[in-house]
Image 1 (cartoon, rainbow, N blue to C red):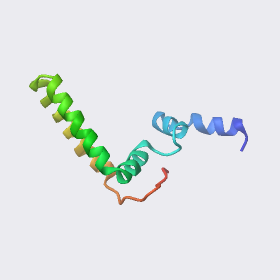
Image 2: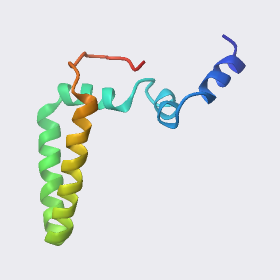
Image 3: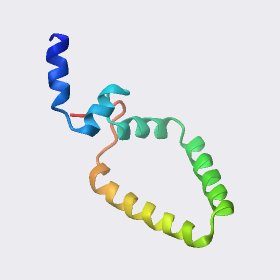
Image 4: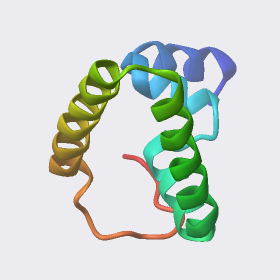
Length: 92
């Protein structure tokens, strides 16, 4: 396919697909999932450290609002991401 044919096809993509087709060639959720499975301990330490930092630098009201927003996003994310993990999975 010529460069113009590929560009024409690219313009038909949604904004999200345009972004991930340029960076990594796969949906970012699949890339992050692969990284999580390769280095779970590092992710856990990093997330705990981030939580400690946030807890020390923001008031409780802001922290609780952030936790609520995160929990809602996490829950809704599982409606779409609750598929069997396949290493190196490609987007459709």
